Image (cartoon, rainbow, N blue to C red; front, side, top):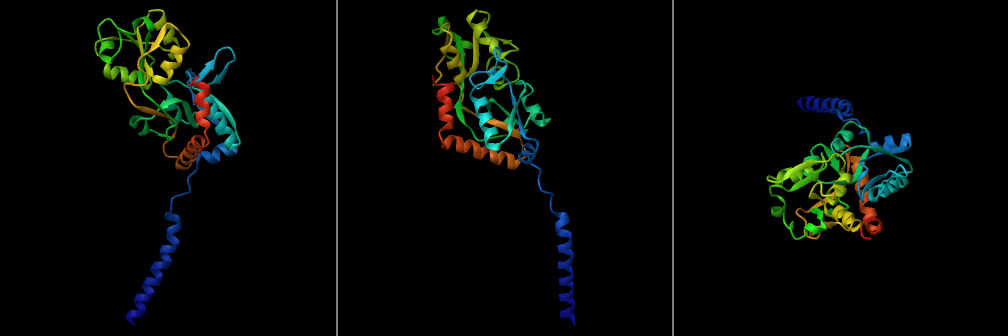
Length: 265
């Protein structure tokens, strides 16, 4: 009798557990992958002020650059339209958190601070902070110590990793905030400011198109960083898709082609 009672109790417990278990399981995650497919377009946040990755061409009114081409390839892979959303470096993370765009693409440095709030894909290019100066000053500014001196004017665009680096390392020189990133090289050439510390890719590209400017030791940058694409932190299915996309772009040589087109001229 005791054995039968125990079996009955076990059977009853299993029955109750089977009834309760489905309700206890979390609901299936709704991913941007499904949302994007249903609405037929993907929203891409981009600053439009960072050559060669994202540039809003004033003549055409259209975005162009390395990451703009990648965004279009994402649209093709998903079978949806690509719609670009204007953002700034200061509001880049907020745009993801507030759902203003699905992914941000404009040469975004991967770092632990951003990773706390948003998701970042696997890297697609390696970069590092490097000074952009006047060619006439190339013997004057060779090191960070040379730059961080009283009377030297270091220009920064607010909100990005360039400003963060400058404020962490420049203590004696004057920091000059310039609202538009694209205005800084011209200000250096004109003598309004002396230095811009940016990613070596940008420094090299700008210097190649302006014979008054000079990229300081771009092969030996102050930092070793990489770029990734920014997505919502907790949408794992979407992040998985983006990471596989990045992997396949690299494996098929697509990133190499875009680097040749936009960076290595």
